Image (tube, rainbow, N blue to C red; front, side, top):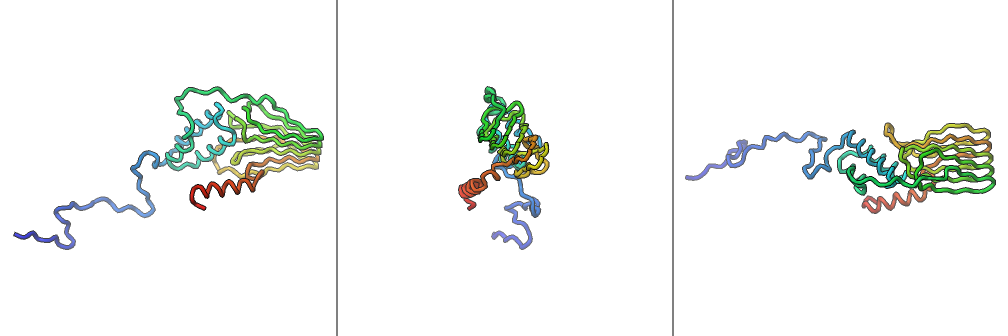
Amino acid sequence: MSQSSPQPGRPSPSRPTDRRPEPRPGVVPAQADGAGGYRASDAEREAVVERLRIASVEGRLTFEELTERTEAAYAAVTHGDLERITRDLPGMGAPGANPAPLQVKRKFSAIMGDCKERIVGRIDERLEVVSVMGDVELDLRGAQVPTGEVTVHATAVMGDIKIIVPDGVSVRLSGRAVMGERRVAVREPRPGAPVPVVHVNANAVMGDIKIVDDEHHAPLRGAIASWWKDRGSGTA
């Protein structure tokens, strides 16, 4: 006895009907390849930022690295994004490390001369910068900043002061200028993102005080670094 063929429009008895709903346009189904593809929550982002702060206290991250990774943490979308940010850091239960060495020198000055300093120690107190008919350059990118905030008192009298900060920090400027100039040239952080802060009390008398980030301090170097990064990721 021959078996009849399935009729058009009727399901085959050998294969059940697929009753799964059709995916809605614009909705990406969750991946089943591990937790890295799942969306991150605000609480998880905050936990990563706290982990970064602890790493900075222990001297594992510079001010520049702390700023960069904090910004990335608040912009993270998935667990995988957050895991990449802390991949080279020990777990929260790991034995703590000793704090980074304290930055002992806190006053920097140039009187009819030049002074160029790159801070690499731990900043626990405010820094003071004075220029009298001289030039001072203070680089904060390599510093260790446990609190995520730095305060600098800068005074320029017929001199110039440049303070270099990491990309992505928030700069809060106060003070006054008398026949002088105060300038801030930094990339604005993402709105609403709590990022490291640099407070600068700047007083210029016939002098110039400027606060710049890495992007504005060395724009050519930043462009080359960005090109190289894109080239390495295969997007160039």
